[in-house]
Image (cartoon, rainbow, N blue to C red; front, side, top):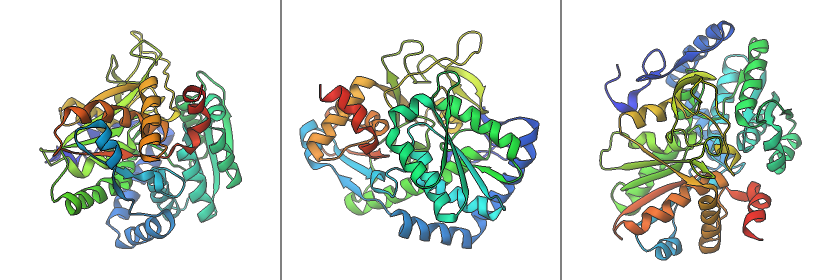
Length: 399
């Protein structure tokens, strides 16, 4: 068992009772080989030097830690800082992981890349790095998500990616993952699957977290420089949970720092009308990992709903399930209406259009900041920008 909370997973890929490798036999050896290759890469200074150089010169890191002065004044409580992942190349945090994984894929000799995407930002990030490194790219995306994220579909195709519409089931993120998994089983010899969140079989939850830790590492250094102390509260939206674990992980051993993950409450906590896994969910296995998920009494995965395509998923990353189980991180939810109102509030007060995913974290901020003292400090992860959501948000907000 690891000595500290931040040193999970264990050697078998488990975060306490969560995680592991629950995949077809065809994938067991490739995943074990990937885990070995990643362990070697993370110890190789040359790998990290190349990644850091690209993160700086190609992606645009470090991102600013921005004091939202007008929003702080309007809400009338804690001082609010926004970690501006929305300013990265491609418009969201997803590029951190996509870049790290394609360097790893090249290192192990893979020539073809596949990915799944919900809101399209991971698909765009994958298409971007594939164009940069000259690799074939296939992205699976639910037909429903393709319709509500048409701009990102066009961006992927313009960069040379093949975007495959998935029409099975609910035609959203879960089904896109299923199709990507089927592809990978059939083509594993030359294909690497760049999973877009801290989900799936080991070693993916660990790898995705590690490639996104740069968010929290930067935020920690920046807040110490600006305020001379650590924040009182960290806030991030949680679908699979990549942006949140990236922010949270470097602070896990700091007991004074409270952390809140915000799930998608959809139309409210009504069966099949939300995607808040800790609100009525249960322990189960889905798409390679044991974690907390939404399922009925027969074990069948429930339908989900969220105005944000990137949070519309039935399971949460296993590390989040572990952190919730031990009480280190708290989890709440925001409804569609609350997220849309937060979208409007940040746009009209700070001139920033947040992604609808990030807007869920902003919705929680609007509730909690006024209850905290003026000398309190909050860092919220603005995980992506809302350009992709303007058409959808306008249907609700400009009526």
